Length: 166
Image (cartoon, rainbow, N blue to C red; front, side):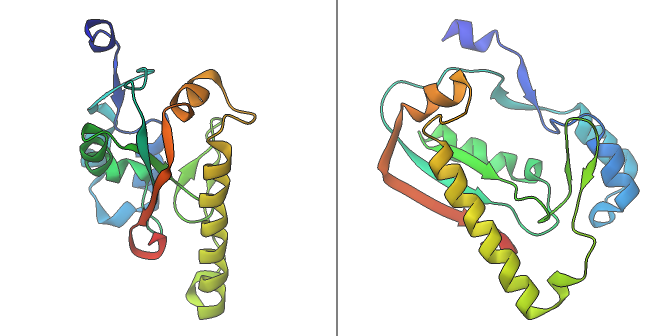
């Protein structure tokens, strides 16, 4: 609608300071100038857009180990343009995350280098997907989550992922 199109576009990197943190971490050897450019990008998505009417399939997507969720924006927007509700699930300690206060959340142990530690982490990431699916009902959530949840067809749910997230 015209009202939705007047809403601001969502930024590519949502968290303030994420580009700087990514540069400090040497994120996949991407040049710091490119990361700063990412921080200025706007997506095709609108902030606080109301869900489209109707019933929608849900796609839960688990990000790859060490990959920020923004890197999946094109995939998310493509599937959303076809009527799917696309939820990017960024598990704590699976990659590089920032809390609202700017604190970096990242696994600095060596557990992911060991097969048993990696299997344990994958089990935790699966639990995170279950949590998101349960939370989708708006339990403890905000009104916008409840509005989206009301449009979900829970007979049509898929889970996808990239790399270890898959």
